[in-house]
Amino acid sequence: MRIFSGIQPTGVKHLGNYIGAIVPYIEGQERGEGIYCIVDLHATTVAYEPAALRTGSYDLAALLLAAGLDPARCILFRQSDVHEHSVLQWLLMGVSSYGELLRMTQFKDKSDKQKDFVSAGLFSYPVLMAADILAYKTDEVPVGDDQRQHVELTRNIAERFNSRFGETLVVPAGVYRTVGARIMDLQDPTSKMSTTGANPQGAIYFSDEPSAILKKFKSAVTDSGREVVRGPDKPGINNLLDILAVVRGVSVEEVEREFEGSMYGQFKQTVGEAVVDYIAPVQARYKELRADEAQLEAILAAGADKARQIAAQTVAEVQAKMGVGPVRSAS
Ligand code: AMP
Ligand code: TRP
Image 1 (tube, helix red, strand yellow):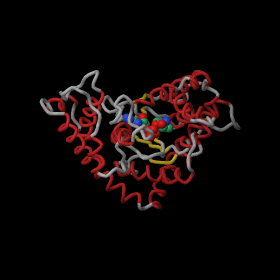
Image 2 (tube, rainbow, N blue to C red):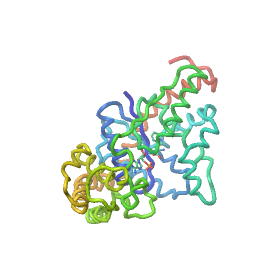
Image 3 (spheres, protein in one colour):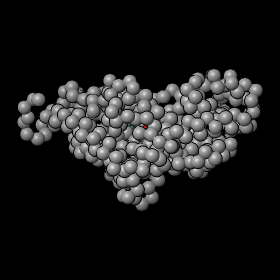
Image 4 (cartoon, rainbow, N blue to C red):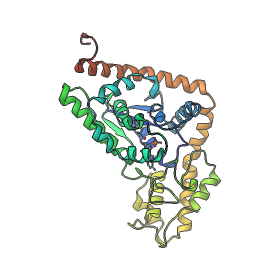
């Protein structure tokens, strides 16, 4: 069972990234062969600062290791170190449809936000993501809910390649958490928690001090009701229930039972404290690991060496099927 996922080294990571993506990575390394990629090439598709991109890759590597990824048990690497991803992206462009890419909602959202310049990279971004996944003959892709459409596209690309050139690529399955795949903004619980939300009070960042975290939960938007139970018109409470359930590793029903008869204020206080306790050890390990950049670079380089061996094999097969390059003897 091979598990692959990618995460962008941009912005400060928040609780949504952690619960929606990073925690499933840790679970993945227990269940199968986990391969995790810091996708710095994807980050070049919108305006960015080169120096911040480089340090962002180290920030993210340190966070992933602090969260529990173990380089002895999984492969952790930086996308740009394995050139096979870019080669495979180009090879897959010929089986990717223009119309399909135009329909990607992330492209529509992100291109609307770029005022002066929409890069061709932003448009072909999902094909690079497909290359990331398909290069490793991946079985499962754990991602947050917002990546569903990209995973579906990847499956279409793999199927199209196989039917045109013969069985070569593994058609991967997206894996989404049932609770926590979409952590919402604390100030606007109808939109997802993100680095670019309207109000920084709405997101819990890994760089936040405990006092700031408690304050953000205290001021989390709820509703005019009183009961701590799930409801269709209670997005704020639903979100807090999800967060506490995930952080404690229990079901939402269990949390509801515990808070029967409690006031919203008390509930919010408990969620805040639970989140502080949950991320404090990760924050402490992060500080230690982040201080040694040479060590982080060494871990990423070793990961890239392992990743390259797998990806190069797939690229060779794909090229052979497509008639690209010289005749190679089968290995
Ligand atoms: P990004 O930082 O946008 O590259 O996202 C990294 C990972 O976090 C992806 O797998 C996203 O699907 C996931 N993610 C981002 N925001 C959230 C959220 N609010 N709730 C759950 N997962 C999220
Ligand atoms: N597009 C993903 C995101 O924004 C990041 C990503 C790139 C990815 N390549 C991937 C995720 C491969 C899973 C598999 O979150």
